Length: 456
Image (cartoon, rainbow, N blue to C red):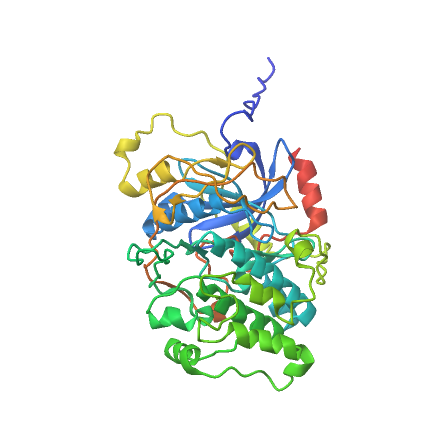
């Protein structure tokens, strides 16, 4: 009598998105309680980055609110120079983010490989990132952890901002004077990676979107000169340098960066937030950026439409991730990732508060069927299910446009201190984006083609 053949259960692509919809390819990164791997959608054959976060580790590290907040912020945003979320879902063990796949490596990888980067490439990336920041700030979102590790390149060399684990949504102050435009309530929490923190963060006197422009300045300086503008042997010395030290450039600065470029750096790294580039009070912060002599000759409409070619070429024959992640998953992981049906007998009322929070607030998202929305209504937290239309997001030219705009409301811990380690020990990120594990979400194109064929 012959063996009975066990047929796989048909995949329901008409139902809610889940892990059965994706073929699992290579592991390319890991963090404190999450991992990243390349996946391929079994129906569309599109490649994505899958970031999956273990619920038990998330609870143990008291990071549930961060994961929920990141999930909500990512649902709101869609921009050509941001690593956008395409799907979100969960099973009994993990929460899943399906994100745009970046094949060019992170800027930390390229910085360590080359020592410093050419001015023309840095200028181009800073313009792209300025567009991303201007978009985020228009939605009252502060990133708070902009650094080379959190800037990923796509296969064409374009820069994308990732890691929204400690990003927050600003609220309007209730103390605004009658007849005056509403004021944003300043944040006071010390959050981010210290080497890139703005002085107003360390001063704990309140800050808003101004801190992201300072961090952009630190990144630009580091990319151009191969070292940061402010350094210290201890956190105390580093803090003092950020608060007080003058900005100096290397002796050979003229060979690496033009006079206009150096002037642009000083414009971002000024401690007076009213004079800092990008920080025009109650105005269009991007105008001084676009009109600055360093960037003014760029075709900004074409750049923001992602039409301009990047001056930085990505070698498609090279892998930009650590191959040992695959071996670790194979040899050391007790419970390797695989698609599993959810427990139909699970009683949500018997779960702990943290697990229940994930079940109730880490909701399914599918960009092919759902409109993007905001969980913050008029800058305040809200539990209402009402919706309102807002400005449509800029379409990402590398993907089909997301069906539409935004709405809704509920929480963040914007004033909670969260200082990530100084990036002399880079690779930290606490699973906020998928820069986990060095130079992630990048891959060898030919090998990926073979894996895609095997997955079909």
